[in-house]
Length: 194
Image (cartoon, rainbow, N blue to C red):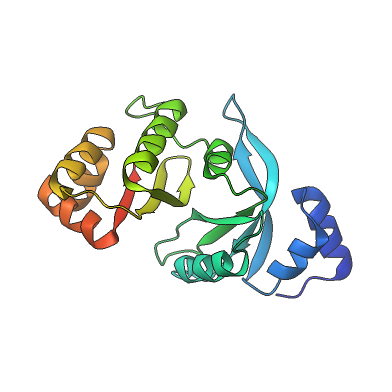
């Protein structure tokens, strides 16, 4: 994707990021968009950051490349939207190395199960302390991450995940034991709510 200098400049102003960041990202995907998050009233709001629109099923690859490219810098990429092969994946690049800044942008929660954004943050902080959790991506009703110090008992961890996000078993894995196997293969956690 080639953006003119004027398009790059306008996007950098709307996204509240440097022109240099836009130039670095302009060759990484099919399109660039302004990052939109949610405010405290759950209304869409433009946030500081850029979204790289990728081809379907290429978000993980682009995420890995961008994390390597921005290693040691104050920009952090996260999966923003997973298209599951049907539509493009999206990767957000935000001007912060704090994963809680990104989580506060997308305001991950579960209205269905009455799990507040604050409860999601508390759970992620607990996983970070216990397991060395690294946030790889999140949206309004999902999050994905890996562990540097995985749980010794994946079955107990899967039961904890099921209690917090029942849909991952009821509409996904089918059982806590199957979820434990999936989480162990992942080396982390992927949760979502309907």
